[in-house]
Image (tube, rainbow, N blue to C red; front, top):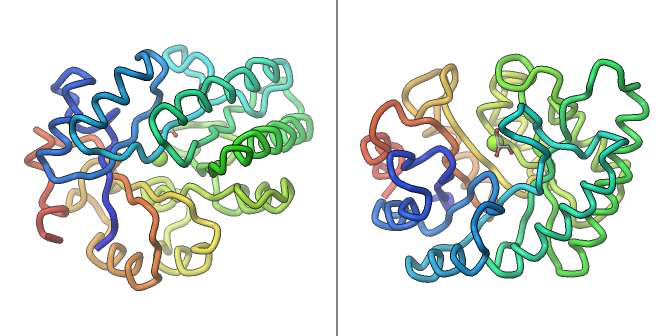
Length: 259
Ligand SMILES: O=C(O)C(=O)[C@@H](O)CO
Ligand SMILES: [Mg+2]
């Protein structure tokens, strides 16, 4: 059975953020992730993890003004200083929370930014972040996100783009964050691509499609995909990153069914 984690930015959202840790533990999860920790003092989050015996699996590097629609700043030449300061902030949280992996969001390329310039900036920033994380033996993940439904203009919108980047940055601690929901929208053929990409995958997330709800609400055969993840010997975390159609506890048949 894969090691399942709960994404607390999407699950248990009828509870206050700090109360979601307990809900996740009671539901049977041993790991959690969420978009960003930065609104909360690190000791407060560390206590929530400790109190409920949870592992912090992943969070994102600071990604600009999320509420204003920004989805990462790593490709923006005029935000390099902010990006690098964000790496330091994320490292402080990672150490306090015992988190071994951080995700870097590439960002949406503004229409007036040259494609090559965005790419070169992204490569430099990813190298910088990877080198800083390597000093703490941490892994940097790069997520491919669909540009058809959720993030039009997102720079890394296919596994191929991420693999090209991983190749170019040439750092041992950089991995692909494979989100089954985004990959179903952009590419499909999930099991075959998991087979091909497995050596470069550092983290997996999932939601069904369409709708981004729990498994069973859409077109993905999760039983077969989870079996494949096991069969391939993937030993990382697999995070539930979906919007439950009702109360989260009532959306967990996929989890209970697997024991
Ligand atoms: O939107 C997604 O998918 C995510 O994983 C967010 O956490 C952005 O990384
Ligand atoms: Mg995701």
